[in-house]
Structure formats: C-alpha cells, structure tokens
Length: 168
Ligand SMILES: CC(C)(COP(=O)(O)OP(=O)(O)OC[C@H]1O[C@@H](n2cnc3c(N)ncnc32)[C@H](O)[C@@H]1OP(=O)(O)O)[C@@H](O)C(=O)NCCC(=O)NCCS
Image (tube, rainbow, N blue to C red; front, top):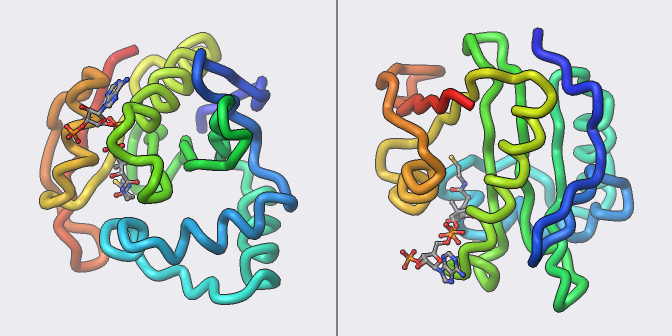
C-alpha cells in the first residue's frame, strides 16, 4: 500500500487545498447532491447535514484515502475536492476530483489536480491512476490535459470504466 506520509495543506496560485474536516460537512452535502456528482460518481445517499458529517468521519478514518477540499482564494469558498485513493482492485493509487457546477469551466479542477500530483510525486508515488465512466468527457479532457494516457477499459460492479495512468 502506498502511504502519503505528509497529508498536509497544499496551495496553488488560485486555490488552497485543505485536508477534509468536519467543518466541510455542509459543502460536502451540496457537492454530493450536485448533478455532476450524481451522474458520474453516484448517489451516496447523503441527504442531511448529519449524513454528511458521518460521511466525513468515515473518510477521515480510512487509511487509504487522502481527500483535499479546494478553497478559492479570491472567494474564500469551498469549491471542489481532489482525492487520492488506494483501491483494493487497482495496482496504483488513483486521483479523483469533483467541483461544484458554478466553479467548473475555469481550470480550477485541473489546477487542483496538478497541485495534488506534484505533492504525491514528492511523496514517492511513481505511477498514478484515474478511473472514469467512458462518457464523462469533462473528466477525460481534464485527465488528458494533466498527461494521463488510457490504460484499459474494464468492468467493475457491472459498470464499464476507463482506467488511465500517468507516470510521475
Ligand atoms: C470533472 C470536472 C471536475 C472537470 O471540471 P472542469 O472545470 O471542466 O475542468 P478544468 O479545471 O480542466 O476546466 C476546464 C475548462 O475551463 C476552461 N478554462 C477557463 N479558464 C481557464 C484557465 N485559467 N485555465 C485552464 N482552463 C480554463 C477551459 O477552457 C475548459 O473549458 P471547456 O470545458 O469548455 O474545454 C467537473 O466536470 C466535475 O466536477 N464533474 C462532476 C464530477 C465528476 O465527474 N468527477 C470525475 C469522476 S471520474
């Protein structure tokens, strides 16, 4: 298992990336019920603030998840998340991302992803993966801009997924 020894706050010119905290529960409630999350990631059935707090606690307890919340420096608002997860069915840790609809189309998700990749490389991760539904064109576009290449198409829990990889 890959271990990120330094799961720490990160920053770019436009964003602060802060490890997920309980205080993010209201933002998480909004993000997990946003149309893009529901369509391309799935329904986590997080409907109330207390559901969102339980979700945050579950993630904080995982030893295999690094989950940053991106805050816009100009607006001082939580705008999206970038995650690095070690899944038991993939060889390499994989990066994921989701941004609120009003903060998409601004290059913020790519900025946040590149910032996280830079950090995980410094932490010794040599290859990073990403998985996405084949019709998630926004996600595929971002991953290609970040230098990922398609590795394979596979089926997981009856769903066809594209796995991409990037050598860091
Ligand atoms: C996947 C997702 C994070 C991509 O977000 P995004 O905002 O489209 O991605 P980027 O940060 O790369 O922004 C790209 C867009 O910003 C535009 N842009 C504007 N200003 C920019 C800047 N300064 N720098 C870079 N791009 C900029 C680009 O031209 C591009 O526009 P286009 O989509 O019309 O080509 C977003 O669609 C999302 O949250 N989806 C729902 C969750 C999801 O599917 N997650 C992935 C699961 S695998």
